[in-house]
Length: 183
Image (cartoon, rainbow, N blue to C red; front, side, top):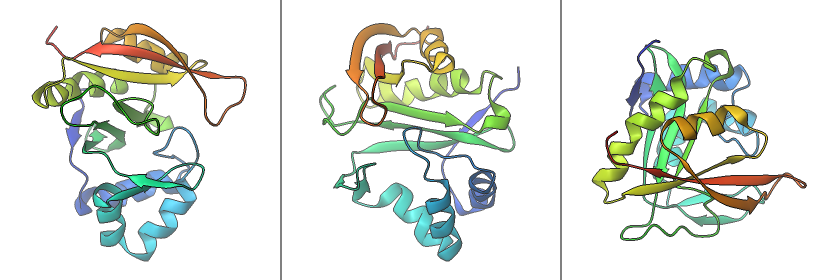
């Protein structure tokens, strides 16, 4: 298995991010934002990168804007761009607002999937969660996303029920608590 690294988003890596968007990858697993992000990135690369991770507000799939939670965002790399993973949270509590389904979200570009990259990325971000005072984090995945379910379980995920799926009628989000302790 190839080792991966978590890197901070940067202008140096932005061309690789742009290439992934141009190839149809979306960093959002609930709706495709690839074309929208590609247009914004090509208009103003520096502004795009800043707004992507530092804007005080985020836009939800339904168009509403809500305050951005504190977060640690990373790009996944095996020497090339492979996807993204992020940890969002509210300081001092495991609770999340109803607009955030879980503490951690991740996605791997389709041409790098099924190589264990998401499993490794999740394992690598857990110490970051622990450094923020979390002994466990909530992670969700779609009920029909077998790959993501396996990633979560491989990192010690314990099933915690379901949530209604906001954008896919007839589907639910599976919820898991994942311990942040070293294993």
